[in-house]
Amino acid sequence: MQSISIDNKEFIPYISKDKITLLVEHVAQKINNELCNEDVVFIGVLNGSFIFMADLIREINFHVTISFIKLASYQADKSSGEVKQIIGLNIDLKGKTVVIVEDIIDTGITLEYLLKQIEQQQPAKIKVASMFFKPKACKMPVHIDYLGTEIPNDFVIGYGLDYNGFGRNLPDLYRLKS
Ligand code: IMP
Ligand code: MG
Image 1 (cartoon, helix red, strand yellow):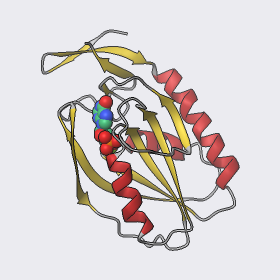
Image 2 (cartoon, helix red, strand yellow):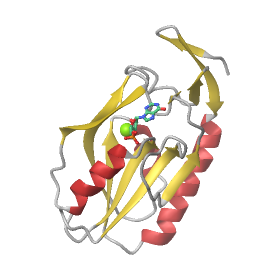
Image 3 (spheres, protein in one colour):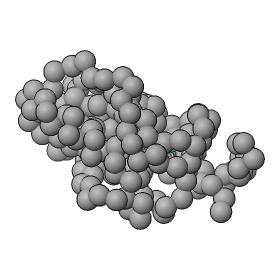
Image 4 (cartoon, protein in one colour):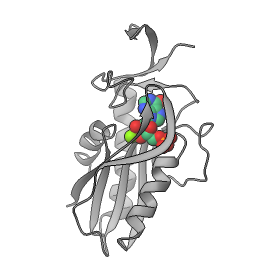
């Protein structure tokens, strides 16, 4: 794999698409085992989660529903620390098992915001699935029920994740060269 440049920043290959596929299968297996008898709605956090969501739900072997919410906190390669809701939820979550689907949990600010929002709708349970997690960047205690993999505190792109809007379509994960 070759490195990639966006806006004069260099990104180097980090996790291959084959490795990612295995990690997604592993996450799906755990959800299939634990939640197959529940009324589950997956809620993806746009934009970043759309690819993980698409791969994950095709490995789910029982009936589920899906919705998306659109939030933004990042500017270029830094978290702004403030979450903005751009598209809200239009479904009723009361009594459901909600699985939040995130591309990555970094500071944890987005997740905390989302948990508060969803709790207001009185779901039966809230579970969290995230493809990537940066424990060293996390500023709050977070619990991730279904995790692809932990990564170091590097800025990454690919597999849905962007730098200034670019890089989401890369099948592999790349990290910013330091
Ligand atoms: P948090 O609120 O800091 O946990 O970050 C949440 C959102 O920031 C994620 O859902 C991503 O959309 C974005 N983000 C965090 N880290 C990265 C990264 O390394 N690359 C691209 N986007 C990121
Ligand atoms: Mg995101």
